[in-house]
Amino acid sequence: MKLISVNELKTLQASAKPLHLIDVRTPAEFEAIHVPGARSMPLDTLDCAGVLAVRDKSGDSAPIHILCHSGTRAKTAAQKFASVGFDDCLVVEGGTQAWADAGFPVERGERNVLPLDRQMQLLMGSIVVAGVLLSLVNPHWVWLSGFIGCGMMFAGLSGICPMRSVVAMMPWNQASADSKKSCCGV
Image (tube, rainbow, N blue to C red):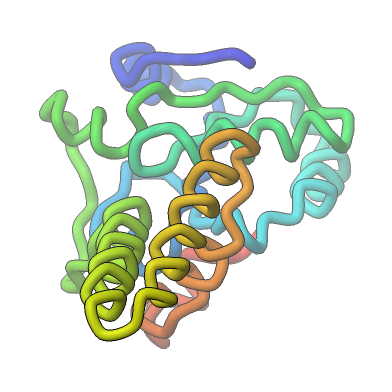
């Protein structure tokens, strides 16, 4: 997997070369803050074959730069592209967070949503605490905490997290009606 730093990406943006920058975070995360020139293509609905078909029709051969909040989802997206035979993807190290931390310009919307990884931490932590507290009433509730722990281990080992997909589909993680037509097309 090829990586690119935010400094290298900034240099590329300043050049006159065409740059394909895909942001694979949820639409709400994208609306809250994104790198100028990025296009929103959420990971859970990313159609790599469709993106490549559009590129093939235009005769474009520029690499695709992929970013997310911190880099994890971007790596998964690059793997999705590789699975359909396209290996010319560059994952932006540190993602949008590293870009903003470097002081580079960002586009901000009015929405302020927590990044998906923090939403997952809050949700799983809450379920674990609920399982522990409920186990004081009935010891069988401890299995709830164990189930979440096993799910976290599975996600860490495999990179697959079904709960993340469900949280990404929640209404607060979707684009507002105003931005759907402007940011999420192929």
